[in-house]
Image 1 (cartoon, rainbow, N blue to C red):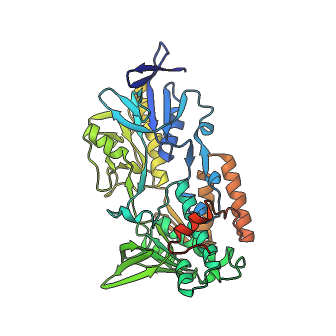
Image 2 (image 1 turned 135 degrees about the horizontal axis):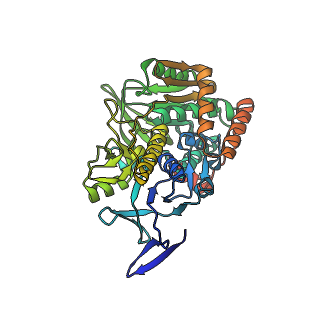
Image 3 (image 1 turned 90 degrees about the vertical axis):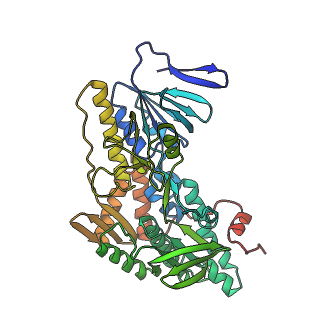
Length: 454
């Protein structure tokens, strides 16, 4: 279907040229929720437009493997146009949504163009949350985007490179100290992967340092890591991390990050650790679209900016505007909101697509019921924890389950094949082929603050 752009003073309006206008659904965000909604909507006799600032879908659960050099960014990303290429009723736009006009049923792009919709699905996810300490962002980067992962990889690998030629023992110790803040799945997986990198992958590659002397510190505010998991799985994960050489500190609150020194409180004790590499995995906040929706519709936001949605994922008073995935606070099943994990977003995306289908075809509306597929976290080689309700698994069997499911959830077959082959190679050789330090030498030096090139 052709699109035309009609100029109107300082803005343009994108509209259909078809005489028999079809129901138009706009999906904002190409993550798990948005992409699964778009793929399901593509089966219907309607018009679909998917908008994302990026031209690719990113498999975020494996970003930590990009950050530690196991996988390349392209291994876990799929171009949205390629994924939806055979969906002839679907248009993909690489653009940024700046505003929404729910009364006129229009989406306004940053380029000032406007798109009319009949149904709107917003799935723009979350970003890092520093709990009011945004000044920590440069010293302790988070992990949500490809750029974040490449930045982390440069810092992690760069620390070993700079330490290799640092004669001062105290400075070398700081370079080989890595602090991960946050003991959820991302923090646990990141700390485990870094331990494997230091203890095995890099072990025989340096002559001036012993990489196995690297200190990896994992800080968690709750009384155990993986606090959303059953206690016995949290204990198993901590035991595995400790065996890898990771120092786990629970009931620990970070109070300051300054000049590459992390200050934290354990009970009544205040401690400090100097580390040139500090990584943030402690919290998330909703994307800016949450506030935009609140401003335009009056919808309630929770304390991290997520949109409170109705039982059908719609906004109260606006039955044709849906919010799904990490941006949604869905509290209609159980005693707390659904977690911000990929299966929730996938199921919500598919449900909203079926709901729109029922409206277009005049059929009874379906009811949403989240099917909990369990939770998984990998700690290291042959070590993982899997929670499937009454079935709780640890060790190598859990690791195999984790491996299979993560390959299965990759969007395209070629990504599945590449990741499977790469993991197989890494498993038998303990070599990671994506250990590239991007950026200029001086950039690495700047990030290792206080270290000047000789």
